[in-house]
Length: 328
Ligand code: UDP
Image 1 (cartoon, helix red, strand yellow):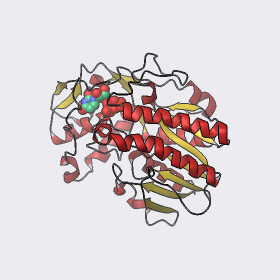
Image 2 (cartoon, protein in one colour):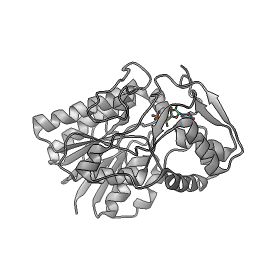
Image 3 (cartoon, protein in one colour):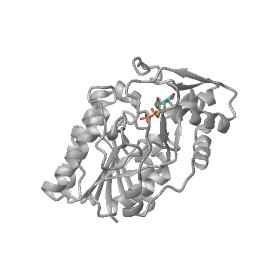
């Protein structure tokens, strides 16, 4: 049975990856410090002998005993509002956490795939974004702690590949959605669905003309599975090129949920990218991958999952009003 370590296992993407690798017959070792992760995402895996969990912070130290075939480094806050709340941890897990994981991969002779992001392109001047584009990032803006940590992560990973001959893979993940997103993490989809479920107005930031392209989580997991098992060491975009404006997205959520609430406009957060769409030519060619789940189908599944959440989760406000987020 191949053994895989998944960091950030209790998070949205990490937990879906645990499910997939368990299903494929892997022995899965999950690791998370539970700052933004939630053990409820993994509860169903705990009874399985195939699955173990370590409550650890990979930014400090990471080790597992015994052989290891693969590492997926997915530990990181992933919502702009979290970068403001825990900026130092965000920087550390992308940089020091990545270094620790690479060191472990080297020690074990394991293949490692690191979770990078469309945020390496910043507020992109090239559209759609190809892997060759170097990006437009403000290092000292509110998103810099995430963007620059991930850019460092890519550089560090390539250095381990070229200098140590380590087997490395880099996935650049575009906006992804699905069940198990934290309802109050501030990102647009849980924000809108949460507002609809609570009977609040939907908050569109700025004019709503900024665009995003949303990928359903199962499609993303399939892309990651294929990339891990490919022999391609350079960054690959995985995302759904179906691009819409945030205003259109709000209208879709209103239709989906049947809410009678209105759209209200709030100031655009600083450095909010104006447009984002993945060019997935490479993923198509190298991995034979493209997304299969339409936004209509994916949103239906996601909405049903959010509807099933207990009331206390729905009304837990967390840091939705974090000072400084909505400020131009
Ligand atoms: N957004 C919004 N209302 C919200 C939350 C987010 O209009 O309540 C906008 C945000 O300004 C951005 C887009 O939705 O333009 C996507 O934001 P998200 O935080 O989900 O992720 P990003 O793609 O910016 O990292």
